Amino acid sequence: MHTFLRQPLLGLLLSLLLAPGLALGAGAEAPATGEPGEAAAPLQLCLSEFAPFNASGLSEGGPLGRIAVQAFARAGIRAELRFMPWARVIKEAEAAQCLIAGLWRNEARDQLYAYAGPYYQVELGYFTLKSLPRPAEPLSRAQASRICVQRGAYLPAALQEHQSLLQMNLDLSGCLRMLATGRVDTAFGARAAGQHYLDSAAGRDLGGSIAWRGPALELKDHMLAIRKTHPQREALIQAFNRGLAQLRADGSYQRLLSAGGLSGP
Image 1 (spheres, rainbow, N blue to C red):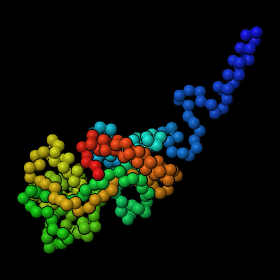
Image 2 (image 1 turned 30 degrees about the vertical axis):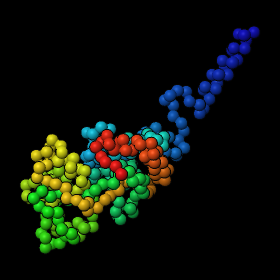
Image 3 (image 1 turned 180 degrees about the vertical axis):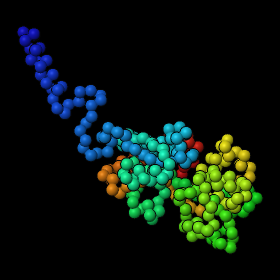
Image 4 (image 1 turned 180 degrees about the horizontal axis):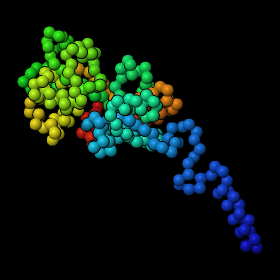
């Protein structure tokens, strides 16, 4: 009696396991529905080296990189950071191959991108030799002030109007070196980034002669940017903002900033 019942039951169980649409193991994938987070590959977040905010040499990509990844994780989306030169970040994002984990808005960018966040605010302004005053405002050619800026970096209107005063360098650390040797009068950049370099082993020899000159010339919101043509734009924006709100609410956001040496609001 028991043997007779067991055979049909075993056949029924096998037929259910082999039916289309039922998962057969941990590696099986659900059919795509267009919802973010369901794709097998992780969501790509493109960014460039920008210590102490983001850097491939920092733990988990740096504090702002960790915040971006964890905000998506709270919404059930697996994301990963991809570090690359800034020109390639823009190229990949414009092709909707990735999201930009940290973009500062301007009129031209607003034509191309939609945004989530902000998830940090960056102070932009001047570094000078401690023996020199902060540049007077508004700038004028009469001052003949030589200002070093990073090539391709965001420039406030106050600097865009005086291109003849600007000298380019590959990065802010190079500008600080130019400042220390008297090749420029001022270096423009992010306060935290400049101070991070001055406090590092590479820039410690400059720390005694260079200082940040507040107040900030401009405060820029650090946004997650997504191409307006991206097919999952609205869903991804909502997911990120929802996850970011959760990180803020339970204190994780502030802990991530503090662990990376950044101050928060």
